Image (tube, rainbow, N blue to C red; front, side, top):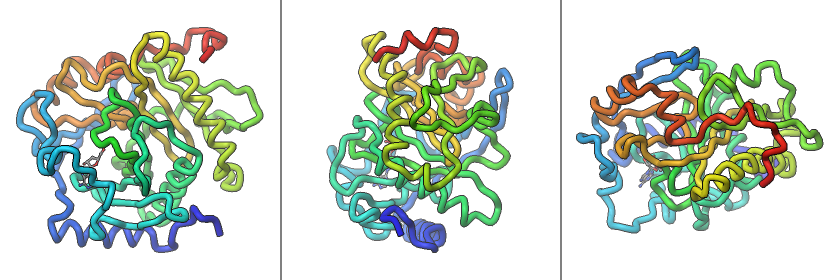
Length: 319
Ligand code: AMP
């Protein structure tokens, strides 16, 4: 038994807590439609959720207006919103997202306040990967899940208390890192293997394939090495551009991706978070949907991130 093991019935616990919170109105689900498209063979799903905002402005999302300024929903979470409290010897809570667009949207939050500007720690990575494993094992429909972390002011985060999020991928969707890692050996902590960067997308990103063997994966040193190797490349780009520290992290049970951010918004109106960097973009109204189609998702991601660096020699990373 490890302190990170989740209850056998974790997935059922998620479903029950979610259904009860939905019925009682604690969780406010937003209807949306998904549009699948490809740009230069990179798959995207653009989710149109018109209930989220009426105007294409930089105004706060409706959920942020509902509570007094400075309210921290993750400090003393409601029992009705809590799937598991005191997870991993009291380090974390696992909560429902109050305003989901996808059912069963989960949050792993630190029990004590930690800043959303801090890098992911090995315990946070282990806990996150355990959540993904548990959800995928319990799925009878072979659903695939991912976790993401929006770090820093320009990353798309709206809550300052540290939270990592978990979502199911849309049906029949293959995020581009799946292809990037498919023929690669997993990263091992003692190797000098460079992170991967696809030449097929215009934005900077760094990816490592992860150990398949659970005994090697759920290891603090291993995950610390993997994450810091991705962070090193990311911080070099941010430092060279004199931008504040902000990056997006997306991971599955098979790979982890980190992408540096230069801006929170595209053209001041379209907010993007980590999910965008693996092809999942949210349009809160019709105008934003049109903007994404007109300007192109890949161009948008490059504009809120940084240009791809896969053609640069690796000794230029010197952070
Ligand atoms: P981010 O905007 O990426 O920082 O993620 C914060 C998430 O927390 C958003 O998806 C919100 O929908 C969600 N959220 C906001 N308020 C609450 C709350 N009171 N309880 C649970 N989740 C919340």
